[in-house]
Length: 318
Image (cartoon, rainbow, N blue to C red):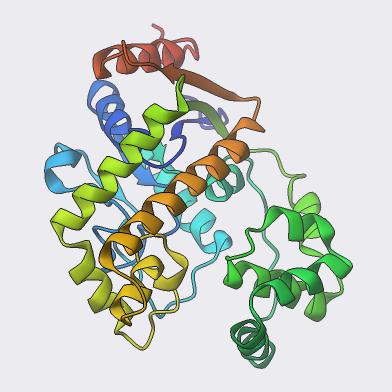
């Protein structure tokens, strides 16, 4: 491939428990690829079961990148992800490997593939601590309301429980006078260096997805999620874990404020809600090629459809 041509990148996206990791591995095996995670929680060490990190067996010998490398105490931004993932893609391409993104963090995928440029903004640690204390005392809604007053688009876009992102949006405006929304618009002006093929997984019957989510949570509990949550939440730097589904819902049980059954049901409920938000996000992207799974489709048929979508790019034509 000519150096001036765009780098081919496959991205497998969709809601939690839809089978993204398995499909990405299958594509990698067939097309000499390696996988770059696009999951904002799988980057952290120690959070294995709750974030559904692929096991060695599930990886099937395919190298995975940007998984299990960051400390919980380390701040990690979208800009950090784009920087590291861009380096990964370049290195894989130079080695003749097909880079394959796999994950459900839509902001990571979009920011990377659209080559959004992040300007360096000084961190105001005093302000961040002040806002964090405010959210702890009065609830995250107080941050949402403040953000709405000068950047309603970001207030709508950022989930109200993502306190770190809310704080960052307020911090950017207070330190630069420019809203996060305006920064994002400015950052989209550079062309992307990637020729991307996006494959999305969804289900014809939403209940089929919800059943998969419920089953996954049950399996996580059998694999030791409660023990892992207890270890992670007992750490002084557990604030990051409290943003992850599967950990914060177990905290009331660990503090004797609910039964284990109630806590597990809450994990399932929050996971289903998260899946709905992921689908809402990804459906706004007209570039995604959707594979709609129903009860008659086995994995081989899903993989076959994915390969047909990729083949239309013409990357591997003689």
